Picture 1 (cartoon, rainbow, N blue to C red):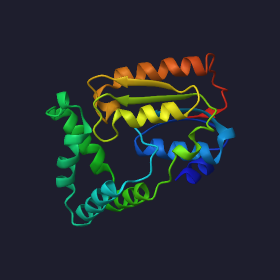
Picture 2: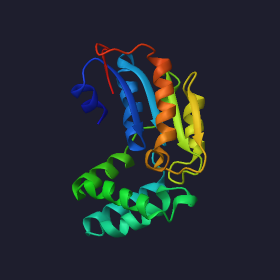
Picture 3: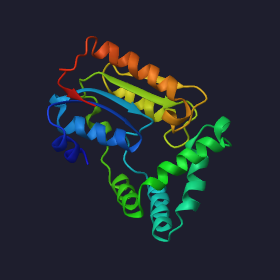
Picture 4: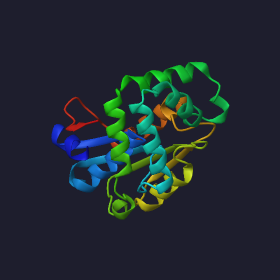
Length: 200
């Protein structure tokens, strides 16, 4: 996935990615550090798969193959948001819409990739680009200690924990996430123009 990203988008890159996307972004930074202008890592995890999570993903893959996607959505939705928003029907509907946008084959392949992901902690200390780490303080899927670990490994990384926010931080607190991202971008690229040679 990281190779495909780097091949599809030429030149320098500014990567902002959440959850699994953050894992891909960290791997892209390992493969081509000279091309990465900055990393914004949202609710992600640098560790390799644990045996417990591997079993959970294997169960999820079987659910997808059995056509039990709706059951998976109900189960995972309870973990996707903070406890304060666990009963928010609008957020649950938006989450369900996002999950169902991908077909069974995509979900199976993504979970297989997650199970085989490398240990990004081994190379994070070599990261030299500006790095922003965001996480919901109530994230149940990728708890805050995982973001603290990333921020501690990456030199001069900036860490923010959003209070009363779970894993789907861009859905639960989009205004707060956008404000932090825009402030970081303003400091990273203080005078952007239409000719700025980067892609997001």
